[in-house]
Image (cartoon, rainbow, N blue to C red; front, side, top):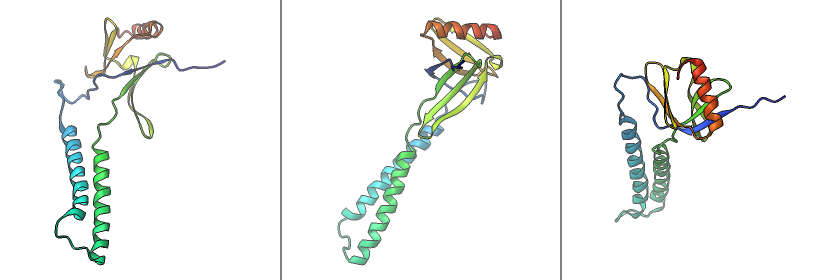
Length: 166
């Protein structure tokens, strides 16, 4: 006898955190990532600028100092450029056996579960054609999922109907 996990994986369109009744998109993270990328590029250019600056000294003791400084500044700039990348978009996993909805983000170190919600803990679910909108506690939108597989659609809709959320 074997047990298999039967779940749906779809791209999440939006994930909102319950901050206020009016859901707005803050630009704080975008500004931080943009400034990290800008500072990283500036540091990498300054590391190269140490060597091509006109009138620089080429004596042996100064060359060693310039090498160490340019390596440190270059690696710091590279690290800031890597930190400034946009993170991967989260995915929605709907587990029809455990009656659970998980929002996960896949990264370099495997998958990170951002949130998991049981069917019973959902506020409601709305079905609009082939799209299912899932609402969490506090009437916040968890995810919008496109249901394409008919077998999985029946399993999900019957589970949500049994929980009284559809």
